[in-house]
Image 1 (cartoon, rainbow, N blue to C red):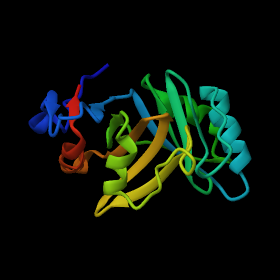
Image 2 (cartoon, rainbow, N blue to C red):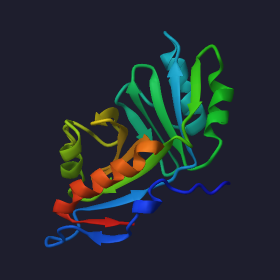
Image 3 (tube, rainbow, N blue to C red):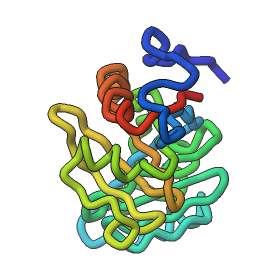
Length: 194
């Protein structure tokens, strides 16, 4: 496995920051999965694509917005016929390509082009709502749901992976700028970088 230098290295400041009067509102981290892959179905092949992802990862995704995750993998639909699939291990793109096949859709390895971030804690919804015009309440954004949205020029694909935890995937080239925005938005509630 090749160790990649995080794009966050110049701005990475572990520890507690911001307004900690009421404790730590959120914990911010970089998760560094081994694989981040986008799969897209050809017209009429959505179900075959979902079945292929399930065969490789064990995760069944019902469609746009729907998702699933385990301790080692995650997947969510973010547009019709398109899924983002994440695995702790490298090589997911090759494993998916072998099962998806050219008659079903396409597989694109985004592992070296995305940075994976996590925000967790009782104020995670509050902080994310400051950055995105999305209702992050658990009723509107249930556990395993995923979306693709933007904050100014930053594309973010977001999946809720716990009651108060979200995983975010951003372009590697924008990761440092997005990280700074996320930290700034978290100052009000106090945050810890781990």
